[in-house]
Image (cartoon, rainbow, N blue to C red; front, side):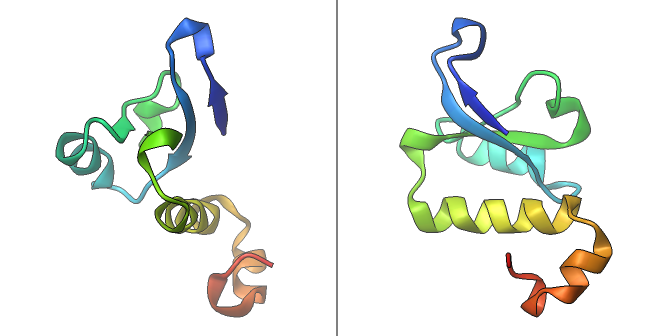
Length: 84
């Protein structure tokens, strides 16, 4: 999910789910890059500031998030779980 200055919070970011147990450690280890997003943070999602992450790392987070929320049959049908 893309966030563009939501409620004037100043963030240009994406929000995505992360595997169980990763949210807290990511946010604590790199608080300038990751944050606890409103609404979906309670469901284990993170916010990623787009000006703090390179394309390769962002792609990695997006692929992992896609694998978590895509229908299992679609993940199974794709080559190694990669995006079609």
